[in-house]
Amino acid sequence: MVEDWAPTVTRERLVQRARLISEVRTFFAERGVLEVETPVLGRAGSTDVGLASLSLAAQLPGERERVPLWLQTSPEFHMKRLLAAGSGPIFQIARAFRDGEVSRRHNPEFCMLEWYRPGMNLEALMTETCELIRRVMTLGAQLTGQPSLLSESQDAQARPAITPYRALFRRVLSLDPFTATLEELRAACARECEVAADDWSHETCLDALMSLVIEPTLGSGSQGAEAQGQAIVELVTEYPAAQAALARKHQDSEGDWVASRFEAYVAGIELANGYDELTDASEQAVRFAEDNAARIAQGLPEVAADQRLLAALQAGMPTGSGVALGLDRLIMLALGERDISAVIAFPASRA
Image (tube, rainbow, N blue to C red; front, top):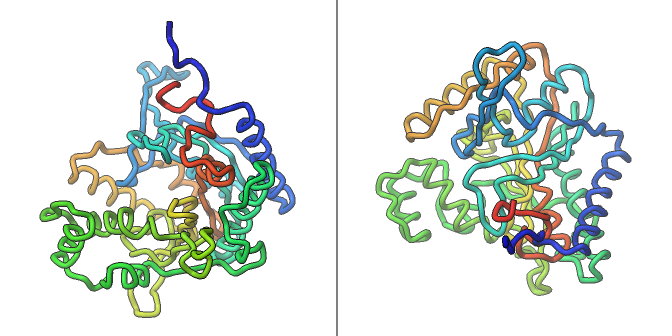
């Protein structure tokens, strides 16, 4: 008899999860943001070198052969096509899939909250993202009867704590990620991450130092709340231009090209990733091609680039900003859990 049939989550947590998701919907309804649904399966996947997609083949009407389809790593491409078609501000609570991501903070299938704000600049979206995180965290504390993980000093009206990517590296590692030589970065990886990085690229070194050394320090309350053992919402901005993904670029105060994007952290956990959205179809096509060239160079499978997204951008997607937020992770933090399996019914091990 199979003994692991039961969910990993308690009924109490299921009820609380449903209440928190309801609060998210209320948050957007108050702002006139339309809830939408888009396909989980698409003809194209994400070319991002840092993401591993899952795919399958299906029999579709009018096709003689089974057609390869991709489980979406986020609903981003389909939602942008809605924006180009005139949807106005939209949000979605979607199922998303990423191969190989399994830990107490990851599940290959997960719940992503994604929203887009035509006409809203990145600064306003950062403020809105922080408001949502604080609102869900506050309600989670009320539901559990436990103190919120967030510092009370970071109330709903507080200005977000924002740190540029370059300043983080200078503060934590005493090196400049834009001017450090490859040898200096490899040495930092060997010293800080205790790995052999002799053949690592510039970007691989930066990724390792960010994820293994810097990220655990973010949102940990080092700006005044540490003494109380409480966390804060901390935003990181101005990533290197090579990490722009689907964001615009701009020059920072020192003249270097950086990505117009942010990531949000609480207690060392990445919760959200937001962009001043790229709307240039030609530049997007170049980025897709560069991604796949990098994938091939690294021995990774090539991913079909989304031609319908490019057509939508060509047709004219409105300028604005958008953000993706890991909803399972936010619920985990809001309910004071340390493992994502405590807030989802069936993790991959029991699916």
